[in-house]
Amino acid sequence: MRTRLIPLLVLAALLPVLAPHGAQAASGRVQGIDTAKYQHDGGRAIDWNAVRGSGQRFAFIKATGHADKTDPWFARDWAAAGRAGMIRGAYHYADPSSSAVAQADAIVNVVGSTREAGDLGIVLDLESTGGRSPSALAAWAHAFLNRVESRTGRLPILYTYVSFWSGPMANNRSFGAYPLWLARYGAEPRPLAGWNRWTFWQHTSSARVSGIVGAVDHDVLCCSAGTLAALADGRTPAITRLWHRLGGASGALGLPTGPEAAVPGGWGQAFEHGYVASTSVHGTWAVLSPIWERYSSVRGAAGPLGVPVAAAAEPVPGVVSQQFTGGLILWSRLTGAQPLLGAMLHRWRKDGGVRSQEGLPTGPRVGVAQQFRGGGLYATSTGVHLVPGAIRDRYESLGGPSSVLGLPASEATAFHGGRLVSFDLGTLIELTVGGHTVVV
Image (cartoon, rainbow, N blue to C red; front, top):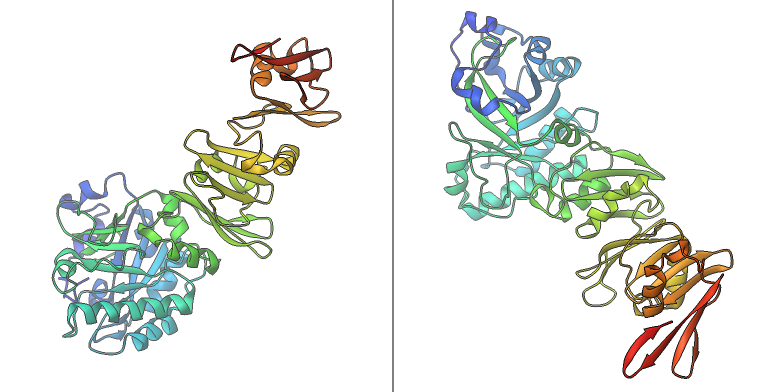
């Protein structure tokens, strides 16, 4: 994003592909460009339909900053790129010698809230120090980003380059929540300090793209087209705020993998390592590992569990629990993550929950039964009955509800030396003989 003059190359408009040295980086990736007034030599407009037809899916367009204040081509390019079906983002070239808040206000006033479909969050283009020390420069950048986020409800994007971050920014590690747009020409870069990945990579300044006269910066996305669509979809600020609190792009959730989708009473969004739902009744909550994997396997918010109503908790050491509108998921190292719903959940809670005789579930409900470490719960016409311990083991070895015994007809009854459970067509008795437990 250097402010440079680009020579007019008339034949470049006829070349629909990238320059050879940029082709490998772009191969197989979601591609885009970034532009400013320098792509308009001689007053030539960009043909955004041709840009889109060449395979470019997104564009970052300079809006404000540096000596330009407002880029003279921004409004026309922003509107035309949108009409052509490009996902678009606006960037501000930082001037840290003057107010961060005023510059943040300037770009928001020009671009708007960036909350329309296809809008990426506003970009801070940070490649100038304004004479500030590393700590003062970091404070300036945070002030800009915080102001943009507070006004738009969107998580801004940060653009920089490798040597700027290791030099003037002294490898500051406090910006990892923001999606990183990293400039490095040549080999694919490693993440900068504070990030676990780049989101966008500007890999060349000399691409040739149909619809643009002369060279243009070219960029690729780290991930899938679903992530690009998700980053351009920010209708629910509460989801963005929670994503940011959990570390944003380099945090526990990772990057979003698809746009927000409607859930009862609100919206939900899937991320690389979790899910967030925001509803007017239950608030905004994330589902993370180790609960998230099981939640996903039962269709998440679209499944019987519904949306989360609280954060995950640890009711006893070594056990993680999270409540949903339709039930509960419990996790431990021994049992993994298992769902509890409906009548099984009601009975388990009535018996004492994690401190009950049945203990933690060892699997989901299958048919009329759900198994626990301390026994099995079985749904019958007379209610949910617990078949405990060794009696359950013997019952299941005989075929469980499909065996000749049928379903349990009562709770376990204790007697001197043992206990018994009556079934529809028989009885199993647990006895202790010579220090050994037997079931007959």
